[in-house]
Image 1 (cartoon, helix red, strand yellow):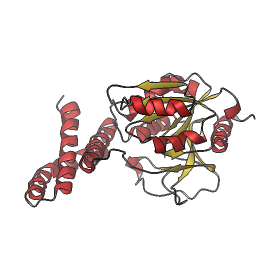
Image 2 (image 1 turned 90 degrees about the horizontal axis):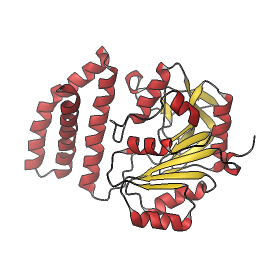
Image 3 (image 1 turned 30 degrees about the vertical axis):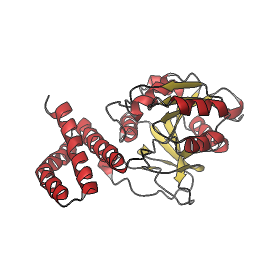
Image 4 (image 1 turned 60 degrees about the horizontal axis):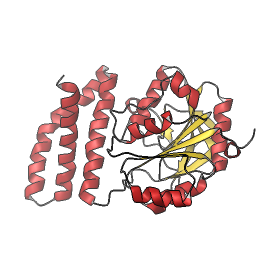
Length: 294
């Protein structure tokens, strides 16, 4: 099989939001031989100018409104016309050699709708790549692979698809998820279809988890806690079985105590804790207004 970077068979979709040039520059250096689609949810014209000066980008879209990573990925995926599509986080490094391994694997496993690499951090330590769905176990164990393995969910920062499968099986991300859980939600859909998700040890990526690029510390806490709370509750709400509805009910019971903690943290000047609790309450209230009050 020919290397995919010597053909026109693969498109890489990257969604940006406030990433510094140095970070995205490192990512793009590794994959410059591929068709690349960049969706910038920050409408950053200066960053676009810098990137286009250094790299050949197939399509570069500036969004005036940030509709979230799920919407951004979908926007890029719909523009892909090649045989394979790879969604890649802007802070996820992968080499052409490892991309070729992913293509080889998805070509080998016809029942697989996603193939993903094994992730390491920059210290070359194994980190989370895939595992169970949230309702079936904690997503905190690192799989010690010997080769290829079927997983229930894969890391959304690096997923390879056959582009035709995206349309055939409706493998777009649910845009009601703004930042979190859209990858595991998609993987759950694949499980329902009785199709496979493969994680392989033969391909690796370097990924830094949960590193939001917003500089303001309070805003960073708010973005993380607000969106994680909303997206987590929405994920369990979508499934609507007894176990998951119980998770939502238990969170609802905690709201009153969170309001009390919010006041205590404010009057004791613990503002980081205050923002964290306020963000969680706000995330719950958005979820409640969108789904529980209908």
